[in-house]
Length: 496
Ligand code: SF4
Image (cartoon, rainbow, N blue to C red):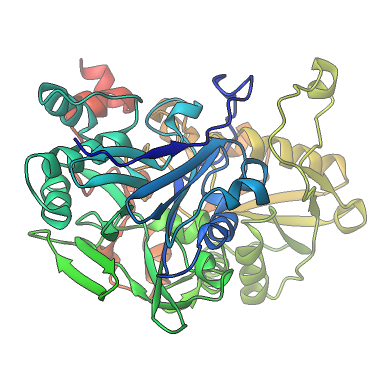
């Protein structure tokens, strides 16, 4: 085993081990990953700002690991990026290579011990791994590694990937060979940034389910950046170079960037929900911002489900671009009928029962002047459980809306995600058990229409086969093992 030092500056706050009770009525993105390689510089601050831009991808924990020669430094804790780090902490993270992570838990509980990057020692020095996605063969991989006497500190699939790489290194392979051998043991979704004393790895699974982009920072030498989304490049002035391809590994060292296509049959299946909702609207995918794609979703929705009305409003923030697109295509005036409290974060203080019953308005409030006596079209990006939609519709009616027509810029969510998005079990998805008419009644709207699956894919302008849309169809691109299917799919449960 190596003799490299590992300095962990972890903050042992009193409540760090307590689980977080946090279950909003929207699918939750699993993670944001970030990496920067800039010889001769201290890069912790760049990683901090990169993670700051990727905060929407995970708000439970944040971490940065840096490499200075053989030494790795790491700090991670529960909380938002701005709560976890300060100037003092960043100064204690020296080095030219940084790996950063923001986390929302999908595999493993919401505990500090599961925060990333995952650090593992090997015979070639420590590695620091940041993972976005979800493996579907975690149990099998864990068992294999335990048989090799590997010790797990956490319950995450990310640690299993890190240990799989370490295992291959300790069996005598060099970093690249070891990483590729480990990836071949992993099934599911993984966009990875891995720091090592010899260089930085960026990699995507053979289907490229989660995004990962490469950027450059100009200087005496080219410096490279890896990020889940282009907004993570913009914030530090990095220029977008290209995406890491499905089944590709990039190896970034003093020599520059080398590319290895390691997967036998790569077949792009980017998560369509990244485009509809998860990724930031200012991030670029397929040569345009997602704001523009979401405008087109709204235009398509108006073509498919026009209804006479006086005003079109969107559910802030994610429903706004589609609402503007709907308004443009239908020539019905756009208005702001809902105002979001921009300073609401997660709260650990539970509202009183009285507040709950009177309809707590912590996040959204209505603009009565815009809504009173109007026939209102309200556009949202998705309905998952329907609980928030019901509250919003009630608030609109309480504010005087004469009619409420809901338009959704994606098809009904009928299946859970196994690839790194928390969409609940199938029985909790309202469209899995109820017809559109039943949902209309449940949420109290005059009419409800979803965008067609064909329309959603058509406006991408890309090959429709290059997306995963399994939460709308149940057609999963990576086979889900039976035990994993049974954990979330109610039809499968019924059979056993
Ligand atoms: S199942 Fe849905 S949320 Fe999951 S990767 Fe596929 S499209 Fe995305």
